[in-house]
Amino acid sequence: MTPVLSLFSILSALALGAISPGPSFLFVTRTSVALSRRDGIAAAVGMGLGAALVCALALVGLRAVISQAEWAYLTFKILGGAYLCYLAWRLWRGAAAPAAPESAAPVSSRSGLARSFWLALATQLSNPKTLVVIGGIFAALLPPNVPGWMYVAIPPIQFVIETCWYAFVAVVMSSAAPRSAYLRARAWIDRAAGCVLGILGLRLIVESVQEAA
Figure 1 (spheres, one colour):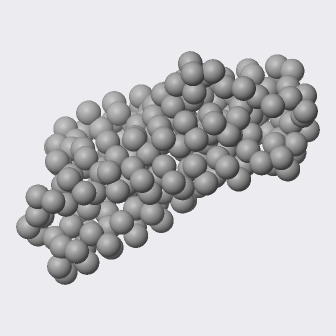
Figure 2 (figure 1 turned 90 degrees about the vertical axis):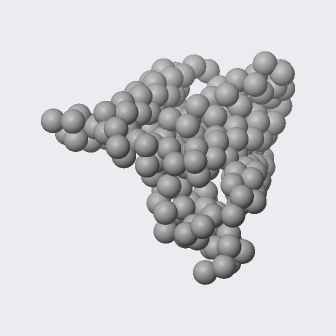
């Protein structure tokens, strides 16, 4: 496989991974409908940066290093699971707060947008599955002799892929109909989202403990 064909294969696999549902999709969706479109797009940029950082780390062999130090990978999984549980707790606690009226157009401050960005970045980086999936794609599809330009090209292209996908999600989910539906059933939706994130986080922690035993 030529390097160019390998690049297109890798980018196709990464794009499929980006659009698959998971904690990142849930976070951007909830941020877009609960806060604002601008917050959702800020979260999309955070997701894109997180994915680009994971790509860069995977390219330099972090996955191989972690595989040689199992305790480091288990610690990474436990911390990721704990962060997802923290997000679940925040969603569940905030579900009881009064919702803004449907006619109110949320206005995001610069600090609010920064908060959405950093929370999204932390959510992306806290998911060990991201590293495993991206590392697996690279292991399967990178050519034996990786040219230098691929190390430079892949992370920013992955940033564009992830950011564009989640920006699309933010625009769609922050439209009038999805936002109206969310406000009508906000408490139930937030609690359901909290349960999903909590289950994912606890699963990561339990798996890590079982692997360490």
